[in-house]
Amino acid sequence: MSVFSRRLARLGSRAVLPVAAVGGLAGLSLAAPAVTAAAPAAAHLTSVRVVPAIGHPVLGKALTAPISTSQCQAQIGIECFSPMQYRVAYDLNPLYSRGITGAGRTIVIVDSFGSPTIAHDIQAFDQQWGFPDPDLQVMKFGNVPPFDPTDSTMVGWAEETTLDVEYAHSIAPGAKIVLAETPVAETEGTTGLPEMMNAEKSLIDSGIGDVITQSFGATENTFPGFASGNFSSLLDLRYAFKDAQAHRVTVLASSGDDGATDAESDGTTLYPFRVNSWPSSDPLVTSVGGTQLNLDNTGNRLSPDVVWNDARGSGGGGVSGVFARPAYQSLVAKQVGKKRGTPDISMSASTSGAAWIYTSFPGVSAGWHLVGGTSEASPIFSGIVALADQVARHRLGLINPGIYGLGALSRSGSSSFGIVDVTSGNNSFAGVTGFDAGPGYDLASGWGTIDAAKFVRELALLG
Image (tube, rainbow, N blue to C red; front, side):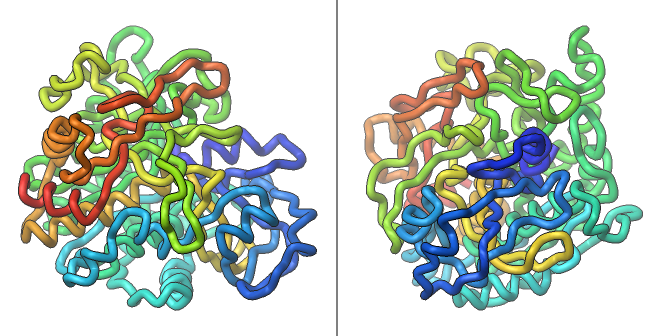
């Protein structure tokens, strides 16, 4: 299910939360009087009560403008980041200065239901940060029901949609965004996935899209037949990814927010042992895991990135129960064994270092909210791929062989190929022992994270 919705459902029974999940991502809702970016706001935020969206038709009151990282630390007790800080942290500004913005490329975002105010909200987001408005096209696949602000599932997906669109656009401001809205909420097992795969295949066959980002996933174990070793219910859904491979379209997916475990069929209970989720586990998909950044107010790193792991979630990672190790992972056979391992790469996802989004759809207070989770990491990385597509002047298709090649070249500790190793942290979560980060590839962060100015160039050359 949407990483956002799953965490919301699980947190919904708690009365007071330090952080709530919103939709398919982990998120913060600030139940405080509105403040401006310039206002100290400390008196307003000292009694913040964070309310989960699932089970609550209205989130806590949003802020009228984002506040700085240092203000968030003082007033909320976490770090918060803007897209401007990410541009510094991931070394994106040298690319923009050379006109590399994703121009001429298209990012496809797939979400159940979508958001009724996404066109307005992305404009407000752009105005805040001085970005150009995107070429945004919303396409409905099937009988997408009208938005119901009293339906917490729809509200969650609307927030997921907002995060996906705003952060894909913030990284690749020149790329076109196509938002594919589907009519059935993706949960666990196969529910909602046929509609999503049909939408993706339809777009691919129509020549629409260079990179697809998916901020959703279902635990492999929840697919019918898994326990008996019959994986057909999952394998029969791979047609969109095979089509993407044939058309050289890159497909990404969030690795999950529950570390080395994930949700059972009820969408809330976590398995008491290691599991993995699809589509992240698919060898035809690039799995994007989660890190926690430590930045100053301008985006400079104060310390190296670590694996995201806090009381509210952890970056997904582990080995598949369905797929054998693909050829491109032969270099890391020691880490993954005979199975497909995830993630491949990681980007910012921590709820203790959350990202600002702007929303105005009914069911939440209009304004600025904080969100996190690997639902954030995948759209961020989709922007990186769009930049590389522009440099290459063509679609890059399945980029995993390239990532693993660059990772192998970076094993000496050199970051000249754009891979930045993440060597600290783990993704143990909810009593399930996960995996430790270390030098080179690991099942907590993949190859680590990126220096975009170098990574985009190298990935384009390999493509």
